[in-house]
Length: 448
Image (cartoon, rainbow, N blue to C red; front, top):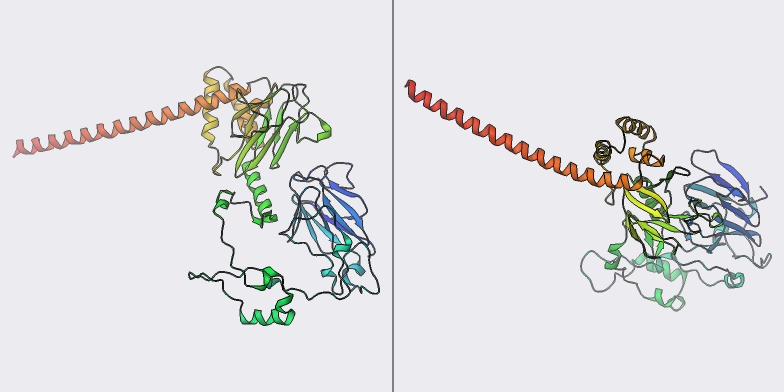
């Protein structure tokens, strides 16, 4: 093989090979050099640039970052060198990097073949580039700074730089390295050659109490979100199934929220996740974010404002939103839905049933409309409220929110009444039982 290849594995599709070239872009946009139809990938997700005999990849400000399996998570503008055998994680898609055979297998001699713009070492190709997951990646890599001199310094073993685990018993001093580890260090370098932080044993890092507020699913390594933390967050988001129902007869519909940052706007060039073609909506109007199993709505300094119910939001001041809340962008009404609450508990179906009963009893919809909405909701695995709202001319967003609130109150009253009725029945049976006992005693005395 004489060229670099990306082997793209999209879930549910057979793998396909895409040749790597200078300026190759990856994303959902049809103009991308490598189009990947994955809802968790941004329209313009990442770009590959040539660098000497190899290539680098740069994240273009994607919502879910560019992840290197077992390595770093690249944010906007961050780059790293591509190596044969690497696996890139873009959304739910895995992309294998396949380099030409000579690059992956040949040992390069610095004296015989100096390469001006890449890192060259006297050793296996795996040492050509190392990405440190715990350190931020620079925007621009200086090839001269990365090139090693002809006589490389002794290589520090990774074990020396890692903090030693603290013993189970209480101890003020860190545990010294094991004898075998000491011997390994002495064979590699002298104490004078060690960096200051590695010259003495390092105590084990203590947990910071401030970290307790962080979400349980957000795994971090030295302040950098790990790939597993990001994937766990996306799985949690997927389980909650958030969506916005736009209540409008002309362009109403149900829009699933599949990203932890979901933008709403009218300007196509900003590539909003929900494009609303209405003059009351700004180009970049609002944003819904997912954090700690909760959803937050933020106005992006829009002209006609963002509302939760009838309350206007201040610009750049996020407010939490929950299922069955009315949200308005300018004059465009929507309702926010989820299938789980902030604790991960399913939204009870009784809530929807009580709301439908209220709408029927108050003449807002007919019994036939309720039955049709329930049948369609079951087919689409959605709420009957979503089906009624998306039509845009059956009920309004305010009607549905009122029905949910009143239905909840009615359910509470009915449950309380049922409890009282049950208690009354118990007391009545006790009284009857006592009367029977008294009658039995009197009868016994009479006959005796």
